[in-house]
Length: 117
Image (tube, rainbow, N blue to C red; front, top):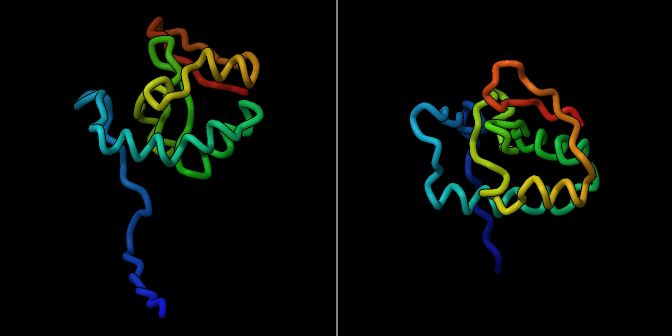
């Protein structure tokens, strides 16, 4: 006999806010493992940059560039979370599979950019 336990939904945001890079630019290992486990199928199943961005957006994430590296961002705040290389999906491997990324570079000289497609 299988028992089902109902957990009441709590009011409030469904996702935590990511801390900005000013306090720390390193994730703890548990968070890193959870992000890899959750997002690896998204990265692996994407057939284009647009599809990857769309699927990440559904989970509350985005992509951007910081100091010339492809990074995962919090979609709501825009905060940088970690590099995609840290998640096991470096830019070179993604570019080989999805094609060249179209990026709008910032003019502030900090190596930031916005992934367009």
